[in-house]
Image 1: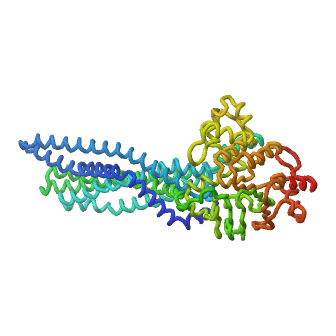
Image 2: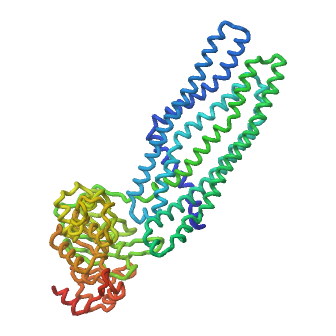
Image 3: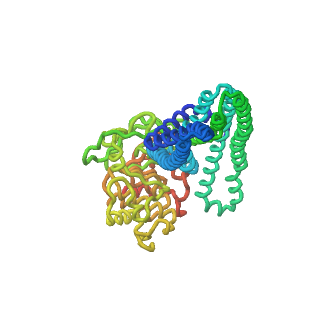
Length: 602
């Protein structure tokens, strides 16, 4: 992670901690009954562990005196020990359930946060980092609720043991208490050092995961470029640092364990020495001395407390990574519905969009008549894709508003928005098991087979789909396709769910000229009538549009028909001459003025 990123993380650390704590509380509530049962079993086991030395010591005194009640107390000792073992086993079993349910809850919360935000906000986190946040880090964070219960229960034996020592003999207790400040300092240093090393370890882990996913996505490019070794070195570049941080975590844990291992025997020996003196003076009995030694062992049980603290610290650090997905801005929806049989009139009022502190769309005010086809043109970086995203509400403007048939898009229900506003992209991602499922994927009821085939025919996809081994039933994993074929399926998916507004963001860029024109004709005559917004790089798309919106540096330079702009604006003609000299098939992207005029006239 670069220094600026580290500084940003430091500045956002308090907010991230609060968000992580809220997520952990939500996970704990989700399994509240089971978490309470874990705490109850762990506390009961701790109580049994505290009772055991007293019962054992008293039983020993009774047996030494040959008291008739000795056998009964022996059975009580066995019962206490059995209860402790059974309660520990029950707590372990419940812990597994709580860990699983809490992890699932955190993953659902993280995934919900990811899916309810705008795509550009979701893109803040690389795919590999997101996968790590929802898998490894969510798993670690999911252990926190049960770990807290165990940590609370782990405090009872030391505290209770100190109280028991004071009740047995004050001088013996004081011998032990002289070492308590050292134990407290040990735990404090352990918590501080562990938190630092774990945070850095997880940062490096996220970065490595992100690079790995990038390489997997670009495997063909890497193979073609012959840079496999270079990519391998790039992915593994931070592996030494990951190893260093991992070893540092274990060193902290090992150092604490070693120090506690050295401290505890000294405390036990001190208790034994003072207890022996008190025994010889007749102040305590043999059973009391045995109980005092057992209680001293429990009071010095820093290992259990250290383990619990380590689990909580690791889990809370991991929760910060997962909770980052919960902090993504929510793309809220309203409760309004669109008027029935609306024509699809789209209006943008004073739209402004800011990215990274810079204004990338500004002062966009426009009314697009319902049922018309609008081509959005401009050079690379003019803001065409962002215009399309705002028009279809994949993102909200920072100022201004967008209305469809008089209703602000922000006020529409999610169902109404996605039912009536469709999108097709230049690089569609296909979802579903089969090709037919990929075309039918979308909001609302699943379309029937005939509707799927009709959409495929309109997108020019039906011929190649029929050549697949099982046609529309072919699994996507068994259907290797070119970029153009994937793009046709993306168009078919959009056509299958076409509403009153359809946004095509460079969705025919990988199609040959003939197929692209067939798709344009199908869009005009065979798909549900409505308003079309086409991000256009082909001249033919602008020619066939009813209206052209010409963007330049995020502003509307002109709006009009293609014929008007072509005739009166030399800079408009230059857009098609400079923004790609050839289309996907190698044909010139420009056409002569005579051809353009003829197309416009037709």
